[in-house]
Image (cartoon, rainbow over all chains, first blue to last red):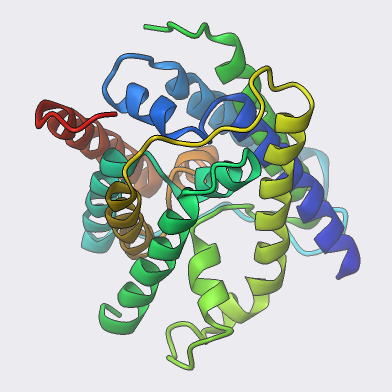
Amino acid sequence: MRMRHLIVFIGGLLFGFGLAFGGMSKQEIVLSFLQLKDLGLLLLLGGSAFVTALTINLAPKVLKRPFLGGEFKRRKRTLSKRTIIGAIIFGVGWGISGQCPGSAWASLGVGNIPVIIGIASMFIGAYIMGRFFT
Amino acid sequence: MFPLGIFPYIVGGILIGIGVSFIYIITGLHATQSSFFSTTLSYFSKIPYFQQKQYLNSRGWRITFAVGVILGALVYTLTLSSEGFFTTSMQWWRLALGGLLVGFGTRLSKGCTSGHGISGLGSLSTTSLYAVITFLVVGILTAMIVQALGVVP
């Protein structure tokens, strides 16, 4: 278990470093992407998805199982109305504020303290979803 | 199209992909982001939705992951960053309203830019592809409308 935490922590460091390096910790950069002034974040999303796709598709061919045990599974989600309605609501929030869950944590790391308001609100939104819409 | 160049975006994306891959190869976990809110709420709420087994099983490492992301961004700020710490000029009401919708929407959709965008697309999931197209299009339309209404930045 401790080993798992250590690995997740190191992966998190890379994730956060990459988000900050790519500017996604700045809401202004996210907005300039959504206003189609700077399409760079498309490269960040594409690059990260590409590397991840290589890993998820090649790892099971090279290794029998993850080093710490368990098995390699794809991330599976069943398409439903909730998938799309949720994505619409997320998109509106993203377009209003330039925040998403991962970039909000990276924002804290670059000293972007006002985003604490956004993170607190995300907790409230997630709570309302779990409390009243399940 | 790329006023800041493409270098930081490509390098940033590859680093994120390496982080996710590193965790996947060693632990088999999909290191995604928005589930954190639901799994962490399981510490505070007795509602069955938050107490589901997969949330209880993953709530520990998800906190570790979030701490890693924060510190990774901090390390960047203290080392390679040319401008140091950054504070957004975004109005508080936008952070609050946007955050509320992001929290609700990502949990309803079961994924965000990271869950659907990175791990979902990486898993070649068509569900995630539809979700990504949806939040990209809606995000762009919303940002354009907000801009057209004269709200700055």
